[in-house]
Length: 119
Length: 113
Image (cartoon, rainbow over all chains, first blue to last red; front, side, top):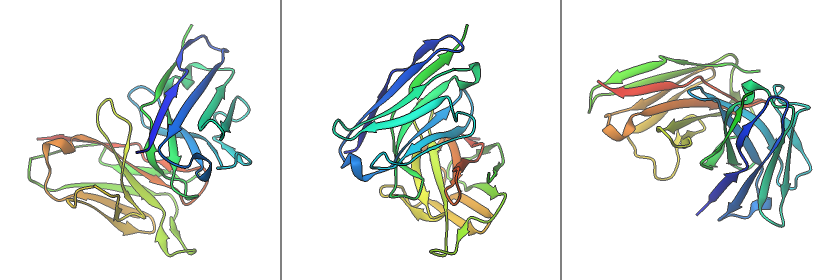
């Protein structure tokens, strides 16, 4: 059974930083691209960032480019999202997702970790 | 970016009746590479992450009841629940994966009438 367990969220002031983690199990981690998708409170879904299975290719939404960095540790089956220069509008639940092959849709989602940016 | 627009924003349907949700893309998501529509549907129940229902616009994910079906091609798509059950109360999202960045519809909230 695929499991994705996020951690690292919390309350942070504008301009602050956090490192989100996602521990993956139940599949061969390095065979799959992974993404972060976020959902602001009461709002819809927004893709944030993706990384290839090897970690060699990364992709970002324009809204986070230059502020967020995605990475992975395939030896420890863990996905990361370093979030810097946080803004109030970054407040959201951040979901770790497993991509289906290289197609860019998501067959497994974690429960999410809440990031709240507030003064 | 491809803009995905769902309609309606909310919908109330009686138990056992048909529910229909529409999704329109700002450009075609029919890929010439495999002649398939690069669209999925998710279901999100309160307090839960989204769950994959359908991919390639009409292929049910394993374990999804057959009352859920998808149709459409090009830019216009439909999710149909043939006979609404109480457990189908949720927000439904479409997503295109034809172009980067992948984008989602704004969601349709489905309730019981």
